[in-house]
View 1 (tube, helix red, strand yellow):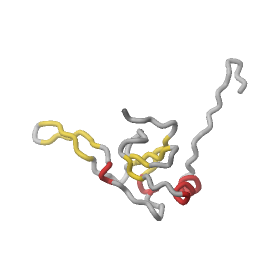
View 2: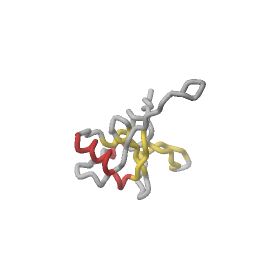
View 3: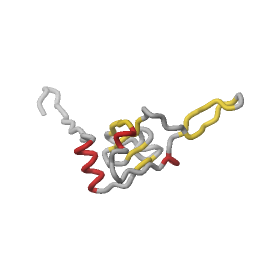
Length: 104
């Protein structure tokens, strides 16, 4: 079963490509349904100029919202984490639970 993380954020693919050590595992692109010869088949999707990938709280990048499927980039280094935080502005929000009277 696919694992949904606590947080991910979509970025245009071009933003990830700004990272000097970026590499894409395009073999892991998600499949999409297409019509071929009167029947519907699944095939790896083709990237388009305005497509997005998802950055997860563990700093992996996927082609979809699940953190353990369609992994495009998982070379997690201190440099990558710094790029995500400083250049992309990636930060996992901290959610505080409030009790019934509204205080934390």
